[in-house]
Image 1: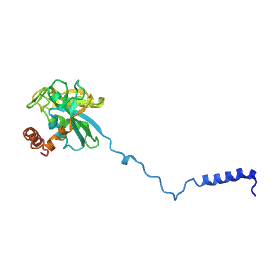
Image 2: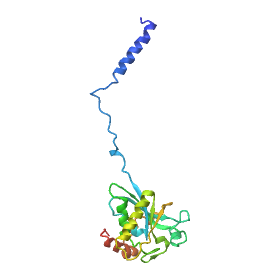
Image 3: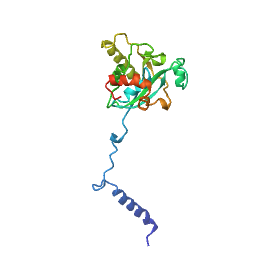
Image 4: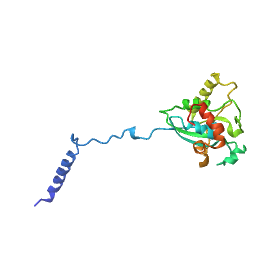
Length: 212
């Protein structure tokens, strides 16, 4: 019969044997590789106003590296405005597109190059027949790096000699983005036969060498 005074020694021996089995084992399967390769890609956000958001969206949706384009409003003094309110010109909002993009595929500077190409930045509060403050040319920056890059890009565009008049594009800090209603999203894709799409957007896409 095992004496009770021998029990602690027996327990110690069992624990030591168990711990020894926890040491390195060359036959044990390696731990799974939890590298960052499986992590979702890092994305960035950019917001621009360049006239009718239907036109801007139709262009930027086709650019490689831009993952998502939402049409909406920014910069006004009315909370969650309707399309009709913004079109009245009384809310101070600009029609904008907000982009989610992959910086490993397209840089913010490259998106700015598209911005200068897809509209006329020399006309104040106007793009063609679309007239009013809601159609102004504006870059809404989200941090100091975007502000600096926007300023530098604007300076390069002005020095390029491409435009016959001074650039009037504003560069402002981003405020609340109000997404437009669903019927305004992917408008050109869903309404190619609509008069505005045929008369304004399709020629713009053709001029830029994009799919109509």
